[in-house]
Length: 119
Image 1 (cartoon, rainbow, N blue to C red):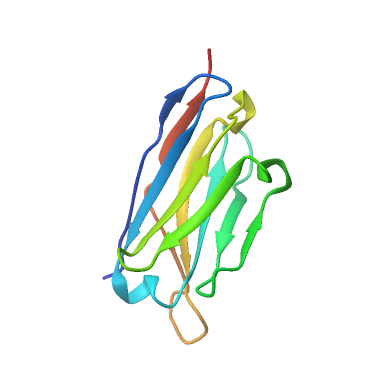
Image 2: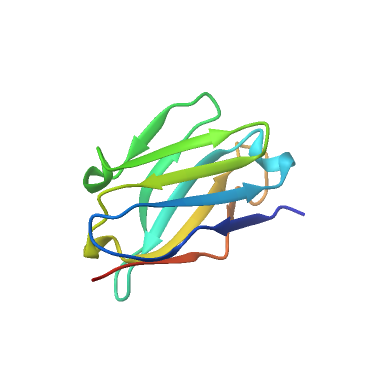
């Protein structure tokens, strides 16, 4: 059974930092592109950052220069370091494992962690 467990959310002041962590089952982590999505109230879920098994990364434009995604293959963990946080970063953040062709299903989600940026 594939599991993704997120942690690290919370309340932070504008300009502050948080680091989100997502521990995944080894079976999926070794083959999946890992990503962080977020969903704010009344808005669609959007991709914040993703990292492939080879280490290639992509970011939401508004996250570039502020957020960094990384993966620790030894510990089956993906991180999202978030700096210079703004109120519009407030959302529930979800970890995604996107498995390659042949897996069914291909997408696995964590339970979400709340990030609130407010003074």
